[in-house]
Image (cartoon, rainbow, N blue to C red; front, side, top):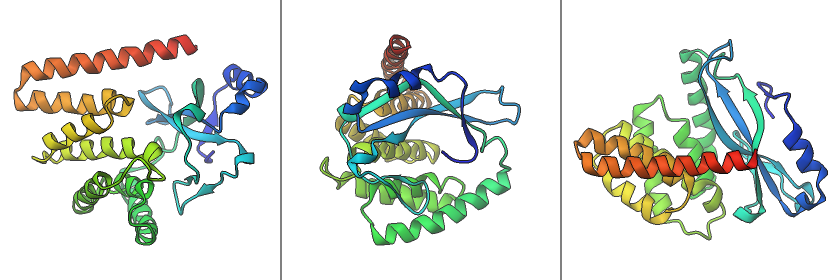
Length: 243
């Protein structure tokens, strides 16, 4: 955990998991990181699943200059996904726009050194892309770089399962933001390469729906929107069952 993250009081799910011997079959577990955007912590927030737990006896350790992550890939079956174990993160609630830009610049300088050593590392490429938000020139550079590296990667890549779907979604975000004419081809590639993952059926599909609306292609927009809502409902239903 970082210093600006803290566990919510409701830890029943976490206690149950750690008390159950059958949990030992899982090598990794994700918790919910809840990003708050105001100091009162009562505003809207965003959630995402973050791999923050691992079995130490597998030899897994954290690696990376910043945004440290686990160094060994695992399969989907070896992941346990917590539905209600939440860590509040108030770092974004305390950062000013000026500080955000300064932090992104610092992060990108560190990540560039790591990328020079491993130019095909999808995890580092994703982190570079995420840290280039405020710099238009670098954002566009890393978007093109990421497209090239991801389309030439294979499912045997070390970070394919953990980083490739997120990278594909982040590329879609930036292509849409910059109104890049290539984005239509990118959506088609993502839907073909990661057809069943939530990063595609929910996140990328949402971006694609907005793109179709902006193009005035309302029939396809409605179709895409329905697919997005169906995928979102399935995830909510799955979370309710877990609850």
